Image 1: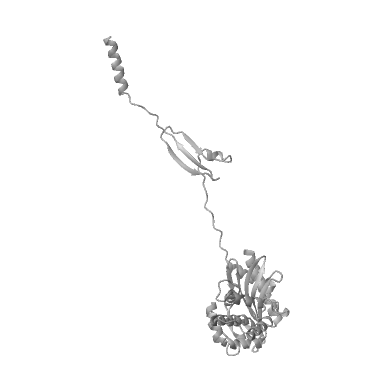
Image 2 (image 1 turned 60 degrees about the horizontal axis):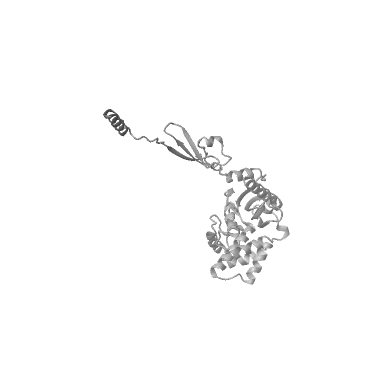
Length: 320
């Protein structure tokens, strides 16, 4: 009996000394996302085995199911387009007569991208008439008034018919060169200066400045009001039939608005021929300014301006 009880006591003591063991699973969890967008959790047990819990769709790959993490390459930014190089290349294809020179500037309205070919100053001839009208409208805005009936009549003849007497009347109305230069500072024209005395056609300008003027007429970021811009645009769309040349050669169909200028210099007998405006190609709007001088005839000057306008716009359109 004693021996039996002693045995039971010894077995109880051994049982109390034995530690209570629990099977603990040591887990390290890794949360990831597969290349297909599936979230998974990879767990590693104390024995080195792996288990994967995944919100996988039926399309999850076997590698993702095995817990492999996807490698995602960062998106590559598209290379910037060198618009100036494109314009220079396009203009290199234009045949310029001996002794003549040409400059061009283009802006794509949707993107705001622009470029200029040539930095020299040219006589404006009659393209200054757009500048004269813009200055008149700005002065009227500042005074809180509308154009008078006489001013409107002059403006229509000046732009649609390129009437010089009307231009001279409005040149005086804005304060001649001083008034033009004051308005141009607000328009952002940095290299344009009004002609001396009555010689508004000898106002000096650059293609880049004419592009800035066109932005005031056709762009949203303008010191001219919406009503003023719409008014000028309407007149530039209505130039008479025999003046519908120039930058319009680059347009598709009749989607254009323009003003041309042409002047035979008395000192040389050579021609200044210029064209500025907006054209539409394949649904995109472009502002275009082309200036030229030194051709032996107006016809040669028109051919040069049109070839330059088509080359410049096509170069931009191809990049778009």
